[in-house]
Image 1 (cartoon, rainbow, N blue to C red):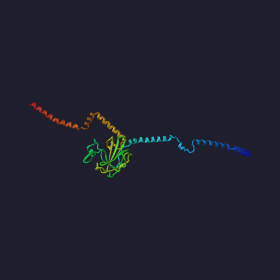
Image 2: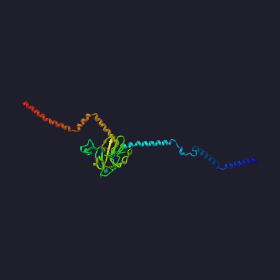
Image 3: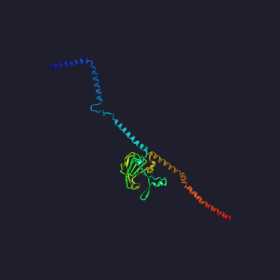
Image 4: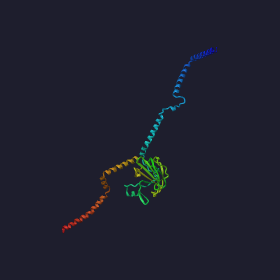
Length: 301
């Protein structure tokens, strides 16, 4: 009996649910609502499959994205590194001070082709001997200490304290050009630093080598180890300095190939040899006249 009652009760509930569904289906909103619900279920199922629960969408990005970004950063870094030497070559060599108007050049580069007076002004007296100045000496107009700056962008390759020259800083620009700064104090760079034009290296001071100059900074430019006149190099690009070096090498090579031309040009450059020849000719002429007169006397006898 109890089983039959349960079956009858279940049948009544089923018929009731079916009758409710039939009543709801007669409403206008029923089928659109059922359609939208089905679509929502399908879309939810799709997104659930694509992004499982507990998974961050940012973790599912393209695994190669980070590698591509890293490669782009490396390319940018390489471009920046490659652009640095080009910028340095385009830079013009500047006087190693922040204000050129406030300083004077008190010691000049010894030029072998200069006049004797200029060469004399380019000698440095030290330890009872005269030395040829391989650079220039710069001093403040008021005799005060001043900041010494990098003449061009480059790498600091040497920083040392010399008992005679004072503190010395050498900066390399490219493969061939090196600038040297001495008679300094308060050094603000270390070996290995990459510096830009105008970076402060230290302050002008005194040294034993050129004590007569007082507070000053000594500045040299070397090209392949050979000194270059700084006053002629100022406001020239590093590329122009290297080009002038190649021109000088070509002229030297041509002179070595044509030694005869060099001798003839030297005679033209120093006409004093012609004057010597004239004096010799004049000195020979009286002797020739005396010999002719002696011959005439012998003939008359």
